[in-house]
Image (cartoon, rainbow, N blue to C red; front, side, top):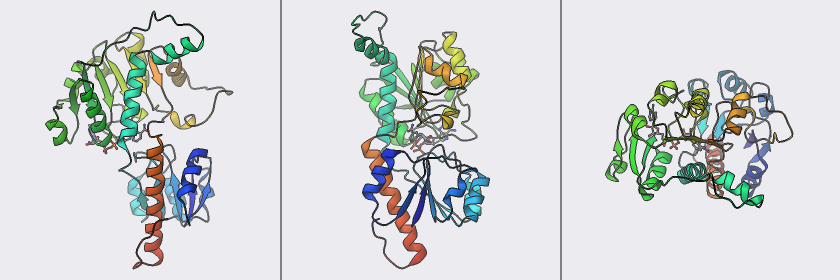
Length: 330
Ligand code: NAI
């Protein structure tokens, strides 16, 4: 199968090529959008990532180019117009089962990095400054952690926090019985926001969760609380979070995602201007720890995504050409 692989990063190409036996992959560094969609011409499938645009006009153009399969390298599907995709009879493939631990563990890394001032501590040591004044942190043991969205990643994060000796609260439209059995208490969103010392977001971006954390929800939080977001930038009203930090109504914000990350994340802007004032406020705020959407980025996860997607491309290729043939690995 000929696959147009958009938003290709060099390390992804290395990983996919090491597993790919017979598909022909065209690695395209640009993101998929209405201006770049023409690059999919001559391919049967596209492979897209978190910041690629799979809205109605792009899908209609892909369909007109005879692309019938969309493979997603991300777990979230908020960038896909699934109604249009189904209407056009296109197939969506993704790897929902890839390691939730990668993102859960990155969430813990962000939390610890923020509350123990690790970026500043490391910078000081690099400069030969071994003073520790101003680096006082807080224990996590004994604190209350609120998890919003207890699917695969939220559950993995909650389990780690139980191991730290935290009390766990959760909010989800579909509570998890195993988590309840493990001692996690489900409460309303308002109760969680008011009681938690740490609030961590692990729900998908949908119409219901867009700007879930805004002025009203932030007003419920303890001024000493920490907010963490490794899910999607638009779950948060970033300006409201920055204002709460400035007014000391919130202690810290650690995040792997940003509402306008598409234009910047996964690219090197160190020699260029960044004309996004909101992003610049986040980057330079003393109480913010920001990474550029790397929660998924472990050896294990990347291998699972590559192998899983390539096998599914093979499955659909076999189904299209020889419906009765057994699938073989890519
Ligand atoms: P999942 O589908 O296993 O779990 C999502 C949970 O959110 C479910 O339990 C669902 O019931 C709950 N939920 C849905 N709507 C809700 C609402 N309105 N209020 C409260 N809870 C709600 O998804 P998974 O795999 O745990 O991933 C969660 C999110 O993490 C993804 O949607 C994606 O946005 C993000 N993600 C981030 C990555 C990163 O690299 N930073 C990598 C992978 C995923």
